Figure 1 (cartoon, rainbow, N blue to C red):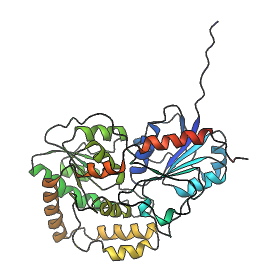
Figure 2 (cartoon, one colour; figure 1 turned 60 degrees about the vertical axis):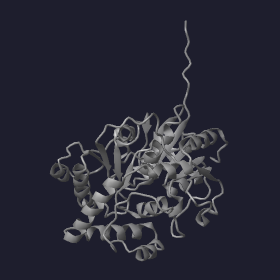
Figure 3 (cartoon, rainbow, N blue to C red; figure 1 turned 180 degrees about the horizontal axis):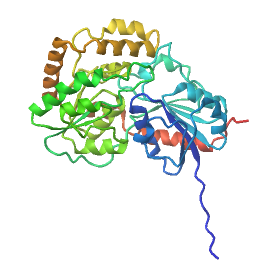
Figure 4 (spheres, rainbow, N blue to C red; figure 1 turned 90 degrees about the vertical axis):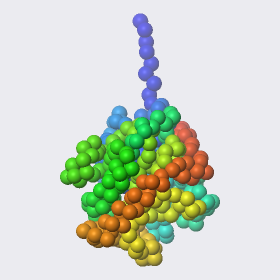
Length: 366
């Protein structure tokens, strides 16, 4: 009689904040480095479109959090500090991923006592006072998972607007896509490109632009599209920018749609290079935004969304965006490769190593 022994995989509780697709993309990149674990998703939200199907999932009711942690060996949390802190309080070894450490002020909550706080490096910044109290701070490279060479189709352009989603309420609006997509698609076509659009775009707008293939794609599908495109025009989410830099695709950035993207544009262009579309002058008053930042991320995002919404039906704003799109479409190059190279590209691998440590380290669970 033949006996077989089934290896029991370590179980890792996973979650990423539901803000655009970047956090879910980070989670997907890290899990790709951990084939030996069984990911257990705490909250499904929109992740089914972004990350691989997990073997099991848990309920999202916060009251069941203790029950959800009874049979897991560690936790991996992306940009949800409140959840990470609560799991750590329950005695779980938590690996926390902060891909936007340059963003936080004293008004933003930081989880200080997790097993490993993995902060993505910021080019030109070597320490951040807001993270000074974090006990187990680990700086990591850019978190991306771009494997294989580029195989661009001549004349193909990928336009990515991301999730256009936010936990702060007013982001579920089509103002952003309605303002930026028409001039971008027109400018690319005038330059001879065939356009493919990814992201959450209203169907009526897709039909009007004659881009019926507009859709939310999985992280893996997005990377495949990235390899095949000749140029990329993307909203300035950090994940998409780092993946573009890793693969070396000529890139133009769309105007920012939230606080993290405003800061991201400032960060990646701080040394003078970059192909970036702009909002009309004074759309987002930087001094005013800084005042909102002192009140926290939520008020800042609300201010930005309100500013974008105010451009609807503004003829001069439409003219500005058309000119900005034409200029940017003609100037796309591989400038993001230099930024990404300066950070390193092994962040997902480095975080996976911390997850393995967390799995086998003693926990504080009673």
